[in-house]
Image (cartoon, rainbow, N blue to C red):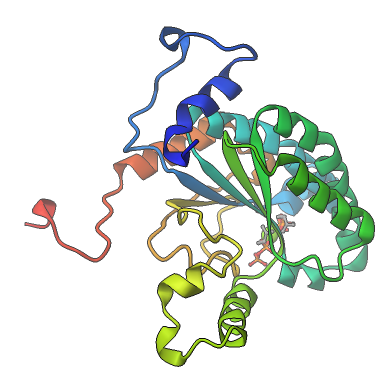
Length: 264
Ligand code: IPE
Ligand code: IPE
Ligand code: MG
């Protein structure tokens, strides 16, 4: 099934447990206004925990628990591709016990959520490298990707041990290793060798916790993405927050470098 026709199925899948006829499906959807691909920089877990007098890992646990409602809302809205930034290559620089704890939480979350996501027809993909990742977590990721590979309702990219600059370097190296000449290396060939090969670029990048930076996330793919930042920390980013982000996106005027009637 082509991706462009998937939104309705995703809506059905997430909106109700059983199939319903079209008149019963909530239709908030002006397809031109909903981003096909939303990427989330899930920031502020640590601050969220600190505000509650709790250790940082408490915030990471709450952050992974929040994923379910965000994905369900994306499905209802008709988003086709969701990318989440779970762990950056720079996050290795955090204290060892935070990194170990994060890996443990992510491993539990994948074990818990992958079967339910599979039932909902979500295809899980991994963006990043599994080099240096503990075996248990690494095999959970590989298993989840394999389990859900044929699903078509929604694509969930998990950017884990991901760094955008390293991704671009890796793509260029693959092209050089394949014997391409300098003239043969172009935008299409680089795109085709990124972790996101074949997927539409993100239309909307949402960052929580009030920050306004990309932190080495999807630098190439975000060339024409719209940005949205909210002061809300990730564990509190709920349905209403997501709808606000999408409504803001819908009101933006994308020009891709051109001019149009509204420019006078
Ligand atoms: C985002 O929350 C999750 C990861 C980077 C893994 P943070 O842990 O960065 O939370 P803050 O920014 O310290 O509040
Ligand atoms: C970006 O958040 C990485 C993830 C959300 C996984 P960080 O909290 O690591 O980013 P900086 O350090 O504020 O730039
Ligand atoms: Mg942070």
